[in-house]
Length: 165
Image 1 (cartoon, rainbow, N blue to C red):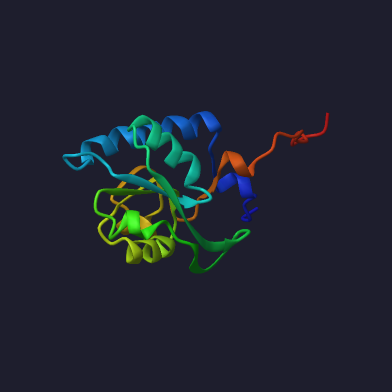
Image 2: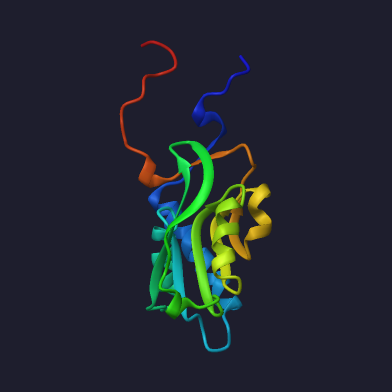
């Protein structure tokens, strides 16, 4: 059988693993901080909100905002568009600002975000090769054909055994 089931090329991330990986990202980002520290965190919603909260806590960054970029319609990628921008009077060109997302896939979303905040430091927890060039700091790289299953997309349920009982 050559067709794979969704879980066979998947990378399943639990809440505990996400928390550990986001803390590892914060640890890396503290070494990259400007001399006077990071001014703000901008989370790319929705996936970047949980990692951004953890990074902001670990690095004691109190100014947190969001940018909403829609680039997925369920599992199909579409042309990214900003549907909510951060407070640009506060964020400016992004100097001293961290942009945090859960994952960079093709990099198209981050291209749109970087255009708005070209001097910001972009960090993701996970990265795929096609989008890797759009990220300044990340924790784990996975293959381009791997689907990451995040904890907010999962539910616990009974699974039938492969063989009958």
